[in-house]
Image (cartoon, rainbow, N blue to C red; front, side, top):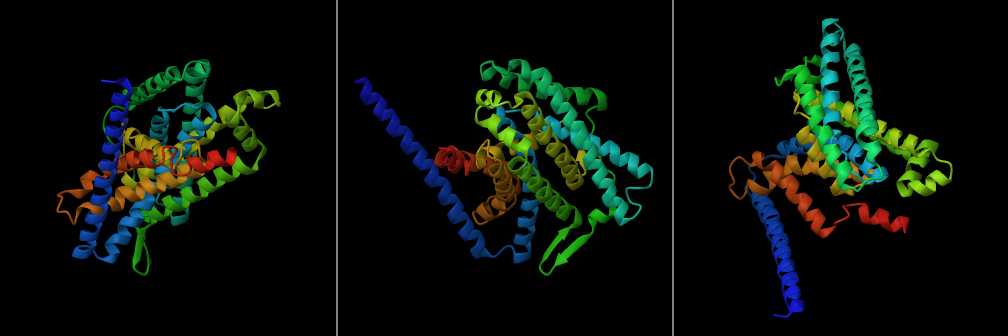
Length: 358
């Protein structure tokens, strides 16, 4: 058989499979959503509760995803150790919380509780930043001019090294965060009700992401980072300290991840040496969904992924009679990733950014 004919047949078969997959997923989403809504199993308060939960979780994903997307934007590599930087922040927050609780400050008064949380987040950001800078200096900088696969392997090695270093120091048991009384209270806005901890996560995420965006877009250091991201050689010729810009990028991403580790632990109240793996993978997925290397895209991707994980299982599968729908959230998250990569390989905002640069 002619080689060209075989190649054409293969291309047609692959295209047919992809279109079949797209149609099947869209059919499940549309039909499942319609059946769920027509059955009226859940009231409006339940849907609002799911949306708020998705927004809270998506805010954490977005903060972690910023570290992935910034490092990729400046070095064109995936820092797979970033999930463990997040884990280090969660551990630091735990030990800081225990010390503050023993001192009677964590639940002393509402003001002292909020101040204590700020101290926990600051301590976590500092420790995560130091760990991230050590990783950059030891595992990444010597390999900066190596083929892309080499720093990727180094990043995976750094991830395992941090995981089992923390396991060696703190064991494999689960540590429970001390309870913060004020965070368990509810805030009611008519039919919308959310816990203080959820409001704290959302507000903190918005403030930190906005601050980071303004820093990168409006300051001289941020301009240097963007210049190095565009072309390191040209930026160096213009007098920009490339190493400094890269170090600042790692520091900013790590600080966000460390603070996110505390917020995540305040939500779920548990931390162990493996706690960074799944949120790290989800945040990487969020960065790819939004457009890897694009800061607004990472924020949007995190929020999108959080909502899909929270609302999607109930909306898509309840009407189809699928049991234990909440256990399918990971399937939905990564299916959405596959769909986005099929329809928009550059991510939700990636193509628009590329056109602006062109």
